[in-house]
Structure formats: C-alpha cells, structure tokens
Length: 351
Ligand code: MRU
Image (cartoon, rainbow, N blue to C red; front, top):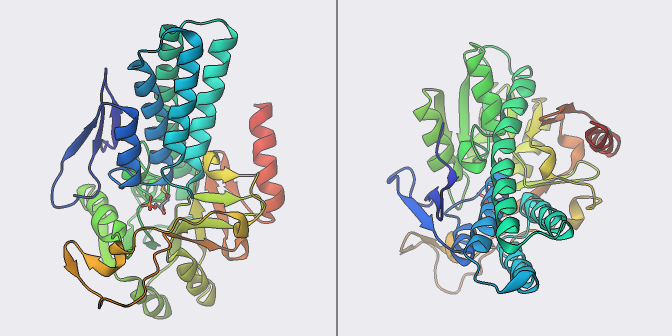
C-alpha cells in the first residue's frame, strides 16, 4: 500500500505530495509546528489524511513536551490543538480528529494520568485514527464497487486516493475495489487546476496500480459526457453538511451539474468523519481561499499579467440534489440526506 504517512518513534514521515510524480521524496516532521506547516503547505493533503496528520502531530508534539506537571502539559496540549486547527479551514476531518484527541486527553486526565501516560494514550489514539481510516476506505470500496459495473468509464476529480487518506482511498478506493472484483475499469482523471492533484497524484496512484488512466483538463469533462464516454462520476469530499451539500475540490460542482445534464450518476465517497451534522447546509461551510500565486504562477513562471486580479477558492459546494448517493463505510446513504445522514450517526452511536 502507498506510504502516505507514518508515525515512527519520534518522527512523522510523509511523502511530499508537492513533488509527486517527478520525485518521491519523504518529509520528516519532528515537532507539531513542522506538522502544521506540512498541512498548510500541502506536503500532505486530502481531508482524511489531514485529520490523521493532525492526530499524529498532537501525539508527537506531546511526546516531546518538557512540561512540568499535568497542568502545564494540558496548557501545552490545548495550544498544540489550536496550532493544528488553524492550518486549513474546510476539511472537517481535521477538526474531527483534533476533537477526538481532546476527548482522549480528557479521559486520561479524568483518570489522573501523568503526562507520560497521557502522551502514551495520545499515541495509541493517533494510531487508531490512522488504522480506522484505512479500514473505512476498504469498507467504502466494498460498498461503492457495487455501483460500478464491469466495463465502466469512471470520472473522478482531484485526488481522493491513498495519498488523501491513510491508505487505499475513498473515491479511488471504490475504483480499486471494483478492479479487485475483476471488473474492467477505465478512469478519467480531471487535471484539477491549480494544484493538479488529478494530473499528478490520481494518475500516479492509478498508473502504479496498473489501472487504465486518462488525464483530461476539467474543460474536457462536458464534451466527453456528451459523447457518451463517461458512465459514472465518483469524487471525495472535504465536508458534508447535514442536508447532504458537499464541499470538495473546486471544480466538483461543475462536474456534478454536467453529470446531471447528461443523466450520469454522481457519487460522493467519504467516511462518516467527513460528515458534519453541526453545519446545516453548504452555505455554512467555510471555503479556504489559497495563495493567489497558485493560480498566477506555474512553479516560478508567471502565467498572468501583473495587475490582473486573481481568485483562488480551493473548494466549492455541490448542492445535495445533484448527488445520487454518499458512499460511506456503513453503506450508501441516499436522499433525503437530512434523514439518512442523521440515521447513520444514530446507528453508529447504537453500535
Ligand atoms: O486541497 P486538497 O488537495 O486537500 O483537496 C482535497 C480534496 O478536495 C479531496 O477530494 C477530498 O479531501 C477528499 S480526499 C479522500
């Protein structure tokens, strides 16, 4: 399986996703600020992977703490949570993972644990978050593969693969599972301007796995659909609101509208940790606006004239009415999402 991120004794190792596919370089983070920087600068990206990185960053940061006594340790923990939470605003998995680590800390503190014991507890929880994410991806794959027929031509946007998760992937997990079932699948990967996650990362992962991959610019999706060359769309998500509205990489909304126009089913694959019932709808999802330079430049070369305004929202929201189903580790949720999403959590709480 692809090595997205690994918490070793006193270092977190992650493949530098800014450098792929040209170079397979590994970044070693030794402190929580280094992990925060890696998330902000997109060394590691993708909603579940960011959550795992934050959990590991917290575990590592507290392991290195020199705090004298439990009170100072708790103050430091809180500050580290704030540091990591300030990295990227849209992917809710980041906040989900930090909240889970906070609950773990609180349980240990309640039990009167020492800083050393608390630190060990955080380490175990970070590892659990990582391992559960891989298991969730496998389960999403098994459920979602049922929607992908033999011979299907699948369009995906951005990278919702092993690199964007702890391993295997959400949208790409569905594709991988379909291929593992023996189906012949062809994937169309949107290039995904401006960071090129589709052209660089999705294509790299799929080619490595020997899966038939064609990279297209996003402007090609419409004509391909019109020509009958796409059977199904599967994408990932950064945050799914309580009514099913889904934030994902900028360009996803356009693909969803095009899919509806051409009667092509549009699926979102995401773990329950991406569903945020406290956000009522897509209008309440914070959309990250990234550095203009990602649009105005390609590497060090300027593409746009000095003086042109630049916009760079990193995500858009696909209204729930365009989504045929949300593939989760607990099965495929169907409209009306305000009911099916809530039910999925009620069932989880009772499990
Ligand atoms: O800006 P990125 O690369 O972090 O955006 C990633 C996406 O939009 C993914 O589609 C999403 O996080 C799902 S990853 C399984």
